[in-house]
Each structure stands twice: as structure tokens, then as C-alpha cells.
Image 1 (cartoon, rainbow, N blue to C red):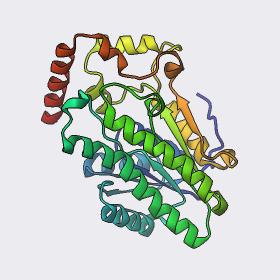
Image 2 (cartoon, one colour):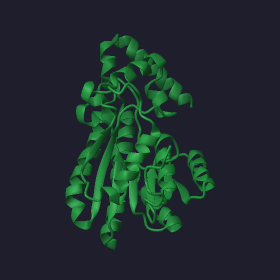
Image 3 (spheres, rainbow, N blue to C red):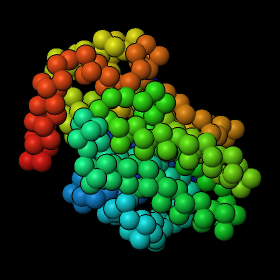
Length: 288
């Protein structure tokens, strides 16, 4: 496939990707590096981060990794300090780290709700605040891109903590776009629809029949490909989008327009059977 962008689209940029060791985070990190950026990936597990960086370096590009728990501001600060020591001042941030699971909302534990909201919302805020403070102090421009979800706007059954926290990230994106535009800082978000990835997809869509039903909900009748999201992310981080800020760009093949609430179809099924399925999925996730 022909290259869509100039090979130096992100030259001289240092892009940090949280949750960058697997799935869509890794796809984005690899794409940014191929377009000339130095990339730092962060996450809680060292092994996938190391594998991602080795793959990027193997293609002759600059990359580094550091572990981070985005729920803790001290860990976030240490992560960025290490990233800048390795690859210089951070100029672009992608808030991709996320947590999610299917559950009946009335059964949610305090810890379960907390884990998702702190990862998705607090984590995005801690990282965004760290970068914003430095960019304002240094008098430099910067770009923040957050990965949200289409149901941040519509809501969705059985993923309440995710919907609540991602809606918060959307509000943060729009609020700071207005507040920080004066400093040359842009903030945008991508709202993906269904993108099959190892890990998150397996936890949320455990059955091929369910996956096929979800595919049929998409007007384009297919799921998204990681490369498509990575290309959009590269565009939004680049100077090609220099007049775009405060936007939430849906990338879902039209699913939200046609259906809304990505997991609402579960409400049409026998509730006891659905809850039993969720428990089974939670048990399988714990074995990993």
C-alpha cells in the first residue's frame, strides 16, 4: 500500500503513548516512529513495552519504554521525567491507557468502579496536566490526543465506569482546548468503534456469534483496522491538523449513528444468562 503521509510528518516530535505496549497503543506507537517521531511507550507491564520498543528499533527508529501506573500522579511524573531524559522534551501525548469490563451496574464493587475511572479519567488528567504544565512553563506548543469511545456520548449498558470516565475525558478535552489554546496547545480525541485487538476485545467480546452480530451493526459491515486508527492519530498529532482543537472524531464505520450504545444489545437477552456470561468472562480474565 502506498504511503499516505510524508515520511517526516512527525520529525522532531517526541510522542508519548500510554498503554503503548499492546493493541491500538502499539499500532500507533509504531506508526508515529515510522513517520519520524521519537516514541516513548508506557504501561504497567514491562514485557509488552519492551517488545514494542524492540520492534520499533529493529526498523531503525527511535523509541524507549518505561513502566507507569497512570492512576498514581507520582508514578506519572517519574515516567515523564524518565522519558524526557531518554528522548528529550515531550511534544505530543496520546492518552491511550484504559480499563474496561462488562458488568451489571448494580453489582459493581467500589474497587471495580474505582479501577476503571482512575485509569481512564484520572490517568488521562495526570498525564495531560504534567505535559500542559511543562509546555506552558517552557513557552512551547503541544498536542494531546485522547482515545475515548463512541458511547462516551450515547452511554451504554453494562460498561458504566468506562462510559462515565470516557465522557469525563471528552469534557476535559473540550475544556482544555478552550483554556490552553492561548498557549498553542491543541487537544483532540478519537472515539473508536469496534476494533478487534488481543486482550481488550477478548474480554469484551468472548463469542464469535456476538462478534458477528456487532459487525452487522456497523453500516460499513466490517470492523476497524489498527492501521486506520494509527493514521488518523498521526494526522491529528501533526501540523496538518494545526487549526483543529476540541474535536472528538468518531472512527466507527457509522456504528453509533446506526445503533448507539455499543453493548446495549445485551439488554435484549435473558438477563440471568448475560450475568452468568459476564462472570465467566471475569474469571477467564483473571487466569491471564
